[in-house]
Each structure stands twice: as C-alpha cells, then as structure tokens.
Length: 447
Image (cartoon, rainbow, N blue to C red; front, side, top):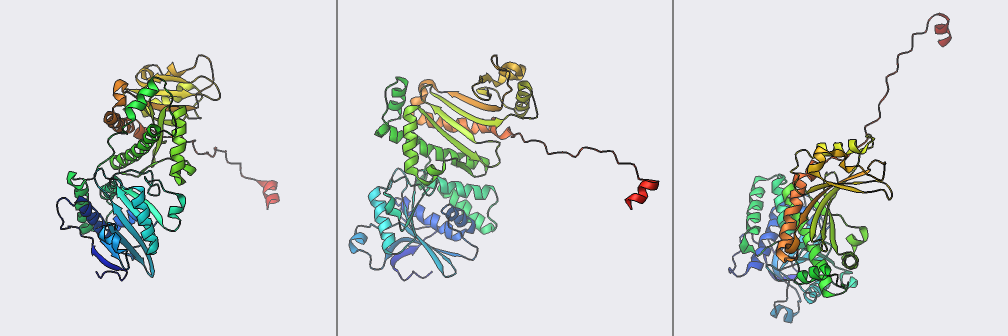
C-alpha cells in the first residue's frame, strides 16, 4: 500500500504488530485499525456511529504514527503526533480522520486534543477520533471539555475501548460477518481486546469524592452544584451509564442505548450542568436504558439518602379490564417465573389518587392488596420495581458499581424480558345475518 503523498512518515496498521511488550498503546491502535481495514462489517459498524456511511465498494487505508508533509519539526521531535490516520475513499470522495489513543488509566487532556484538532485543520482533515478507557454517552459526546468553536471546521469523536469491544462481540454473536476468514480475524481481534495485556478496562469504580458525597447526603449537608465533588460524581455516573449500556448490549446481543433528552443528546455540557443541578435538589442518580423491542425503558435510580438501588419498568395497565384486581392479575401472569425476592409492584392512578406498593410475593396470594382505601379508580399504570438495599456498602466506590452492574441484568433477566406491553385488540366485524333474497315485484324494481 503506497503511502499518501501528503505523508512523509508512517507505517500501515498491522494485525500482528512487531513492537516492544511495553508499547501497549501502539499495539492496540495497530490491531484495531488493521481490523477496521480487514473486516467490512466492523468498519461499517464503528464508522456508522460517527454518521459516516461505508459502502461495499469503499476502501479504507489505515496508518500508524503518520507524519505530515511540511509538519512542524519541533512537533515531530517531541513525538507530538497522532497515533493513527484513517482514509476512507468512496469514488472520488475522501473522508480522513486522525486517531489518538490511550490505554490503561491514561487520559487525553484539553491541550492535546486542541493540538490535534489544529493539526487536522491545517491538513484539511475531516475529524479527530480519540480512543481511551473513558466512557461517553455517544461518540459525539467527548470526555474533554472544549470551547464550541474548537470543533467548528473539524469534527471531534470519541470511542471507548469497551465500546469497540462490544461492537466486535455483537457482530460475532449475531452472525453479523459473512466471510469466514473475516470472522476468524474479528475473533482474534476480540481475543486481544479481552486480554488483560491490552490495557483495556471497563468502568469499575466511582470518583474519589464518592464516599464523602454519600456521607454528606446522609447527614443532610448542603451540596454545591459547581463544586468538584458534585461535578466529578455526575461525570462518573455518566460513564457508568454508558458502561451499563455496553454490559446489557453484550448480554442481550442487541444494541442498548441511553435515553436522553434532545438538548442533552446534542450538548453534553448542558447535560452535565442540568444533572448536577437536579442532583443537588434531589440526591438521586437516574438513567433510562432503551432496549430494542423491550416492553418499556429500563429505569435505574441510585438513591443516596436511602442508600438504595432501584431498577424498574413501567407499563400502561390494560384498558380492556375494568377492575384493579383484573389489571394486576394481567401483570402477575407475566411474572409467574420471576423469583420474587426484592421485587415489588407499584400501582398508580390518575391525578392525586393514592399510589399503592406491594411485594410481588404477597401479591401472588392476594392481588387485591394493590386496591386503594381512598379511591375507587382503577389503576392506570403498573410498575415492576427491583430493590437493592446496600446500607453501609453504598459508599464504597467499587462495591456500588459492582452491585449496580449485578442488579440491572438481574432485574431484566428475572422480569424485564418477560414483560409485554398491553395493546388494544384490533376492531372486529360483527356478524350480520344475510338479507333474504328479493322475489317477485321487488326483484323487478331492483333491476
């Protein structure tokens, strides 16, 4: 593969790079970029997440440690150059992106990202893609805060290593790769990404201030929405939300995404600001996971005051059943295989009517327990809730994440995947007796 004219240095990405054992970063970048070049479905999947379409006739070049023509000699000397370069050619059109990656606990700072954005701008490239163990809600959300005008002429994207690993797993699990040789290549890439030696990890603990924040909430001490402890807590929660999506994607074999408001989806800084403000008013951490074809979004709440984790899914009660008991029985039939420990059902009614809440194990014997003493109105919403009381363990940075990542899959496996949303029955044509055949004078008139 000839080197592009605008490069004076750089090597093609290799599936089996020959590097020092300590060069984990260079090795990981080489493996994944060579994988993109080798496996059509992998490059289609990853580049689609950036809004870049890859047709079957498009070609992809992948280079490691590129050096550009007329590059600043000082930058080359200081090794201030990107880890990789992608060039996607579709007919006469080209899309080019710089790659900068980190492994282990290393992160990319604002100065470095700004430097690469400027470099991309100087060489008329389309994008900069960073790859680290940091998580982002979407590839268009970046863990590094930058002024809005910094990405005016060059797009900035972010992939976590865990996101890339999950895309590989989904393609293999769902038989998403047609060519057998490419299946083997992708399997080997995944084997490397899952190895401890790759330096790739998942989010496994909350921020350093987590314990202090939990204790402050417990003692009703005030929290400042602009303080480092609150900002870092919300940022850590955002990373954990994304990790939950990846975990559930791998377990279900389908794409699980975060449900975000439009303004939060488009502006991660506003999302952080709004979530910090809401957290200081009500000290709970919340998110909703959208699972394809599930009966409802899977809602997750971590309540710092009660030191509880809640997982839930909310269904509209069937309107073709008139009484609360009949509507509750409709839900109980769906949960007959659910192990009841920790599961509850919440019944809500219109307006200010009483909400009732009972354990699943008790409702199986007495579904009328969800009846209200103060309202005759039938329930309109039924919510299945799974509770985990962590008590003192809640403040543990690692324990909290471990318990949360056990609770969400457990709830979905025991209840969520069993639920079916109610739908009104289709309209029917009522049977009408055939009219008697016309005879005599009636028949003549009809003619």
